[in-house]
Image (cartoon, rainbow, N blue to C red; front, side):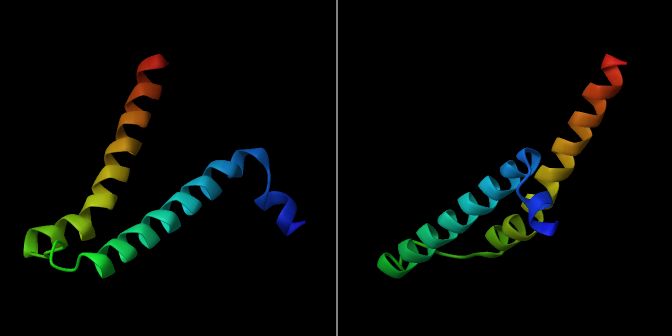
Length: 72
């Protein structure tokens, strides 16, 4: 029952996002091992990495809500 809900057609996009994020993290990990001098970390980069994803998700949710309210 649990796995039936996990593998419904609506949930495939979440598995795709999960797989892409894992592949990106592996890519950046390998890139960091191969070219460690290229990846410099400063305070602005840390702020972007911490608050960036939540800001993007918030903007997307607000835009979707506004578009749905304008249609009605």
